[in-house]
Length: 201
Image 1 (cartoon, rainbow, N blue to C red):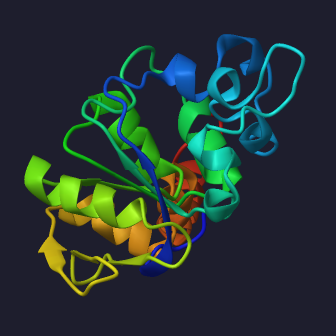
Image 2 (spheres, rainbow, N blue to C red; image 1 turned 180 degrees about the vertical axis):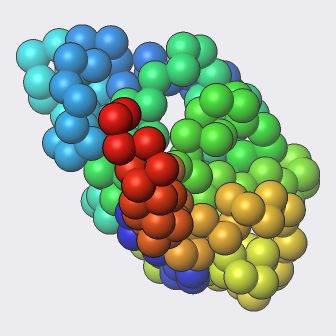
């Protein structure tokens, strides 16, 4: 998993509330077990018409936001079913950070396991960043995970809370497999000792 330390990127404003996981990645794209390729279908029903043409009004189809790495979203982002494909699609599109006032718990936790930093801020601070994001590609928001700060393009800085263990995992690029592999030496020692003590097993 890619490490997350600092990020300076274009932020796309998405003020809709209750964006659920089916809106993030519709059910017809859940057949794959690969994490790659889903970015093409991120927000599919909002980005494209039924015949596959782009909807120009949708924020990620606008030239200023095609390279967005941050999403500033409305309340209760990631609600609905607990599909891990939702953060897979967001990450594959290139978005590394989502800022909102609240997230669904399962989606929130899945973000950390897939290299995405979900940031919870009070409504007034989120609204300032939403307005900042509306400026387009010239306005870059800066995120510093170590310092736990978000800074607007105007230099206004907000602090956010994050669980220390989740922060450690993101800073070091550790998903569940990576955490297990950190214990590889201890696992090998245990297996060798267990095999010697119980060779019949």
